[in-house]
Every structure is written in structure tokens, then in C-alpha cells.
Amino acid sequence: MAAKNREGARPGGSVGWSIVLYIRKVADCGTAPLVNMLTGSRIIGGTDAQIGAWPWIVSLQIRSGKIMAHICGGSLVRNSWVLTAAHCTRDTRDPVVWRAVLGTNNIDGRRPHTKIIKVKAIIIHPNFNLETYVNDIALFHLKKAVKYNNYIQPICLPFDVFQKLDEKTECFIGGWGRTTEEGNATRMLQEAQVHYISRKICNSDKGYGNIIPVTSFCAGDEDGIFDTCRGDSGGPLMCYVPEHKQFFVMGITSYGYGCGRKNFPGVYCSPFFYKTWLTYHLNQTIRNKGISNINSLLGQVLVALGSVVLLATP
Image 1 (cartoon, rainbow, N blue to C red):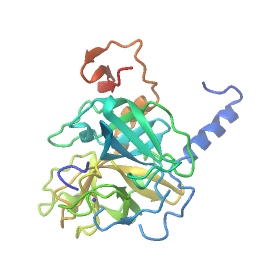
Image 2: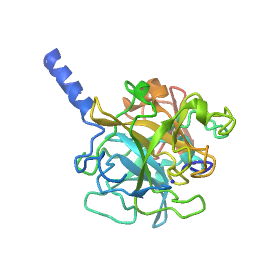
Image 3: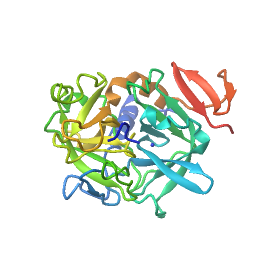
Image 4: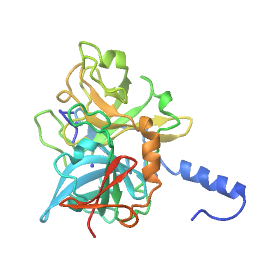
């Protein structure tokens, strides 16, 4: 699936009660109720994903009239927040035209458990650079919070486990992007197993030649057998941490040189380096009141923690 880009009230009670709630919240992510994700086959070189295998993967689509077109992937990280790549908003940052499609592996089909939700706000990292893809991270705030079920679940953020990532870590990619560099996008969610590739190898003269941002890293296959491609941008690099028995979004699909090319694996922006930025925004409730705003064709533009926040006009 890589191209120039890969385009998605605190309860009362004792302290003990609060701790129990916190532990439950942490545990309720990164698991798929319907499948054992470490058995069986696991978009270049990939296979069709089993329904419910990756319940946090989101299709971010743009509505034009009656047509909805898949643009990027994303990861559900909270019940109303989707993590994706900033470059996915290159063509339009207007939240009104975006939709998030959750709970499906077939973006043509509509099943009872499929949810299509409008986007309330798009938050782009303030230092994102479209030329270098540095800080290629963004959040989509959904208009309605989703209810978790067997087909819709959040993935865990990697703040405390990223240091465990190495060549032996079991990682997977998934998306609806092209299955060959010059091919068409797929309508069925594809999946493949990949592995972390060291910066020394990926950033070597035979590879990217020292242009990989310090907040990004490579994963895939040195021979290019398994890779992300155009249409997969914004989707997760999902890695399993056995101690926690959970999947973590170790990376956000960012860019690559072509798709499936030897020595040029996919490049992923790591949420680990954006803990402060992500935590700040994920704990906010986006409102129109109390903040100076600028009316524009893109809705209402706000500045919060230096980030560009684009709100859908009510």
C-alpha cells in the first residue's frame, strides 16, 4: 500500500476508586474482540483483512455531492478523536466536507455496525512542513462520540512503550491504498506484517540519505515485498506489546519513495514524540465560545497551543 505520500465529570469517591477507573481506561484499547490478531495471514504484498481484525482503523473520506471518496486512513484513539497524518489535509482543511467511516473493512459496503460520522474540527500540528513532512501529525475531532463494540475499538497510544520497538516487534500495517505503485486503490481493507527498520539502514546512502525526520522512523521490508502506498497515508503502524497484550499505534503512515521499492520502506511519524501536544488536545472539548476566532471560507480558525484548529461552522 507508499508514494510521495501515503494518502484519514470526574466521579466522586475514594482515591482507590479513581485508580480502578484509570486502569480500566488504559486497558480498554488495542484489543480486537472478534479475532486473535497474531494468528493467520495478516497493501503491497498484503491480504484482505478479516472483518473486525483492526477495529480502530478509520477511512477518512471527502464528500462531494452524493459521492464519498476515500482519501486517507486514520486511527481511533478516543471515542471522538481520530489520529492521522497532517498532509492528508493538503487539498482541503474544511471539516464540513470530511467524513469518518468506522467499523468496516469494505468501504463500499454499509453494514449495521458501520458508522459514518461528520467531523467537527481538524487540528494540525503547528510546525508541520509539507515539503519535508516533518511533524506530519493531525487530529480529527468527530461531531459525535462513537460507542465501542466488536467492530469499533480504540488503539493505544505508545507513550510508555515506544522504547520497546525493535526489529523483533510484531507490527502490522493496514489500509485501503494502492496494492501496486501504479495500481488502483482497493475497496477491501488490506493488511500485512512488517518490521521496524533501523535508522542506520533506512537513512543510509543506499536509502533515504539522511532525510528522515528525527520524529519519524522506517518500517516495512528491505526488499519492498510489504509496504504502504498512496491512499494508506494517515493509517497506523500497529505493533503488539506482549507484556500488555495490546496493540499500540507506534507510527502514522507518512511518506515513502514510490511503493514497495527496495531500500525505500515506508516512513512513519511517531506519536511518541508528540505526547504533550496530543495529550493537550485529546483532553479538550472543542467549543466555539470563549476563544477569539477568525471567520474564513474554511469555517472558524482557532489558535490553541500554537495549533491550527479548523472548526465546522454550525
